[in-house]
Image (cartoon, rainbow over all chains, first blue to last red; front, top):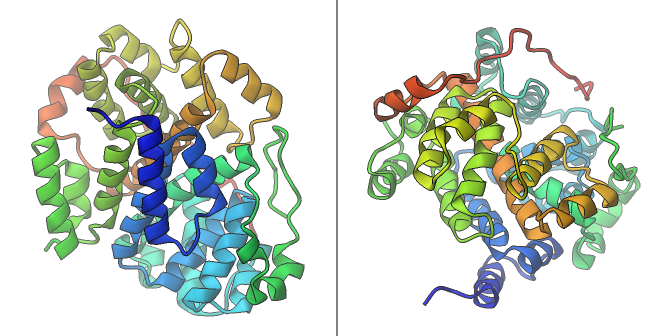
Length: 198
Length: 191
C-alpha cells in the first residue's frame, strides 16, 4: 500500500531527528506542506557531506550563497554551523557584509561562488583557468554548483514562508556575539527583487 | 580515474536509469557528490505532489531559462515518456506557456520564482494558490529550480555532449537552448 501523506510526514520527522539535534523550523515548514520537499532537503544535505570540500569550506560557500539571496534563516543558521565547523567570526562577518575572508583558499572559494552566481554558471575558459591557478579546480566548482542549487531551494522556501530562525540558534553565544553584524539584514520581501544585498 | 563515491554513484545510476548519463561520467574524475545529490533529489521528489507531467513541464522550462541544451534534451525525453506531446514540449522550449491551468500556472510560478529570486508577495502567492499551485507544490518547484541551477551551471562548464541514446530525441526538437550571445556579470558584491 502506498505511503500516506501523514506517514510520509512522520518518516521525514524521523529522518530529521536522526540528522539534527532538534527539528529545525525550515524542516517543519517544508514537511507541513510537502514531505517530499522536506525529504529532498534532508537527503541532499546528507549527500553533500561526502563531498571533497571541508566542512568549514562548505559552510563558507553556503553563507556566501545565502547572503547573496538575502535568506534571513540560512544566513543566521549557517553562521552558527560555520562557526561550529571552525570558521572564524571575522570570516563569517566578512562574508555577511559582502566582503571576503582573509584566508586565501576561503577567499577564492567565496569569489568563485559569487562569480558562478553572477554569471549563472557561464564561466569563460580564462576564468576557470584563473580559479584553477588559485587551487579552485573543477572538483570545487562542481561542488559549489550543487550548494548553489540546494541553497536556491531552501532560500526561496524561507522567503515565502518567512521562516523564523530557531530559538536555540538565535540564542547561541557565538551567534549573539555576531548579531550586531549578522542581525543587520533588511527584509526584502513583498515581491521586490533586491537590486543589491547591502 | 573515478573517485570511490563516483564509482558507487555510477553503479546506482546504471541500476536506476539503465545507463550512466554523460553528465555523471564527466564529473566522475573530480567528485561523486553531485551525482549522489542528483539521485537523492530525484528519488525523493518522485513521491511528491507534482505529477510526472507537471515535473517535466517545469524542468523543460527551467532548462530553457538556464540555457541548458543537455537538460532540455534529457527532459524532452522524460516528458515524452510521461505523456507530454511533442508539440507541448516544443512550445515550452520556445518559451511559450502551456495553454491551460494548472500546468500553465505551475510553469508561470516557476518563472516568477526565478525572476524574483523567490520573493513572491502575498498577492502573487494567493493568485497562484487559487490556480492550483499549493504551497507544497511551490516548495517542490523551488527544489526543481535549485536542481536545474546546479545541473545547468555545471553543464555550462563541462560542455557535456548529449547522450547517444538521446540523439534521436534531440533531432526531433525544433528549438534547443543555446549559450546567450552576451553573458554579463551581474555583480551584487564587491568581493
